[in-house]
Amino acid sequence: MPLTTLDPKTAVVIIDLQKGIVAMPTVHPTADVIARSRALADAFRARGLPVVLVNVEGTAPGRTEQPRHAGPFPDGWTDLVPELNRQPDDIAVTKRTWGAFPSTDLERQLKARGVTQVVIAGVATGTGVEATARQAYEAGFNVTLAVDAMTDMRAEAHDYSIAKVFPRLGETGTTQEIIDLLDKRSA
Image (cartoon, rainbow, N blue to C red):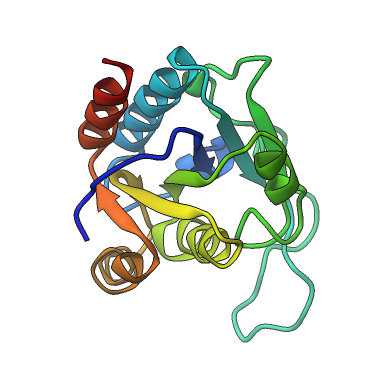
């Protein structure tokens, strides 16, 4: 569904743009994803709307067929990239699952601020971004996905999420389309 509207209380949620993850090889350059995510964060901040910066540290418990990282992460791995220009009023959340909701108090923080919609961007499209979008949708938030402000390590995961999953969870649009909607609301 094409992008139609943003609720008066919309937050932007930026997933896992941290030093350890953005250094990994991705389908689309992370520098572009970071720049577009920063543009979204700046636009939301300028309008007094919440900006959520999420990083990941650790994993959910349980066995998996694919090996997971064991032991401590290298120094700085979980640090958010400085290009996001973190501000004192930003909501910072550290998750230990793919999505940003189950292992954090993000839902409570957003609802306490009256947020009814989230715009989601970040890495990785088919895991952290998709899991957060699913959880936001299930928690009753309207969901918008900034498809040019996300990437994945696997092209098939990125493409599948954008084409098949995201249209079932909300609306998709580009960073500029989202900023244009914010501008129309402010006019």
